[in-house]
Image (tube, rainbow, N blue to C red):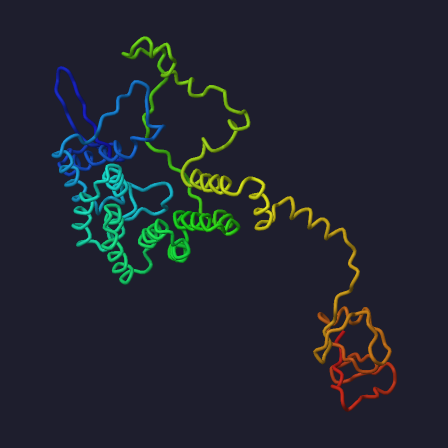
Length: 405
């Protein structure tokens, strides 16, 4: 639905909602609460987004008083179980009760100010209703330096739900902060097994591999990350003004600080301007950042060597295939005999006979005996003709099997 407020002067103010069919409905208090919480989350999550800034747009703090913070917490507590309907970050494929914009907004608001105690109080109330809140609760406890309490919550929750990758990620990050990267690797691998379709699990495993110096595994894991289509945010769509007049000092206007084209001065290298990084979004931007971190640690030349050791590029595959097709085979295919032995098709048998063409067809037309002579079935299945006279069978060898032609 879409919340709309019509202001007419003179006339008054009218608030209503419009559904997908274009029908009007009354704005209920529940919908006003959802609208308020949505506006607060936009102000918190989009505060640092460069794409969300407008020229002449003044940014105000969404919460300025203690009463406002209490109101925000009450609204978050009332609507937290519906938070998955808001969606999640681009790295998350399926939004859940712990992976959504509401959870991210609460953690960002209290995390930036290092006041996790308020978040702990909120998550404690929600954890009594929903056990999956253990990951957010443990993360908040670790953030306020209550690490023992956080680890205890993680251990208790993993005994009940060992397949929760969010719990494994919190524990993995905690071990990495303590320098136990080898232990964190096991948790990152287990998280991938628990949620193989999530980009976040593969990205976490790539980070751990990079920290351990296992660059070949990191590159292979990064290549295996599932990529998702990026959905654009509903940003402000303002037309380009014909003329701009802002209430600023003259010396600021003369300095060209506010000039939008000033940030795009072509002082950088032309090759750097053509890099695809500025145009990437979502999982593609995250994967590019992981690759750039890998390059910063080992260098470009070492990355190319690692890539050649891990992958076979398309050009290399075509070149190898063409080279293999142009070579003339120098050795003929071996033939499996009746007694289980393997012989080259051009090697003479013990009795002096050398079978070339017949043994080549042994795998598709029948099995030829290594005995003397060449037997074939003629007429009916019961008659066998021996071309070299008497069969001269040896009692120590297996009787010949006729070849059906």
